[in-house]
Length: 144
Image (cartoon, rainbow, N blue to C red; front, side):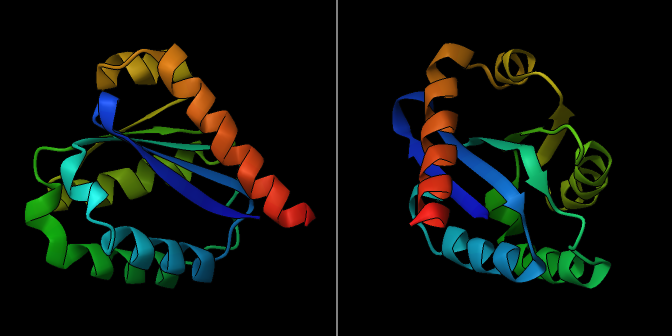
């Protein structure tokens, strides 16, 4: 399906949703768009919801390419927090989070939205509608 994200300025948060089968090419395209978006520089926290994602086709080479894309932006990642919300993708998300922390981004993987939002310092009731909207948009694009 795909990856979508949106900025929630009133929360100082970027919300990202991965839905369905995700390929390395989709991830690369997403990161290119994300790194070119000035909104990401304003928000210092992010929530990545992978609960409905299947990233099993992403290879180690794909991940290495993503790390190389983020490396020149290490100073922008420093002192930022990211919560990954995962089920099936918990272990791969944890492994990637550990690797990207070398660039300064603090990543913790959760399996509960409320706990993830508490760690980020935002209210889950403000975040949940954004997650639903992004996921619905991804699915509508797929069905159209």
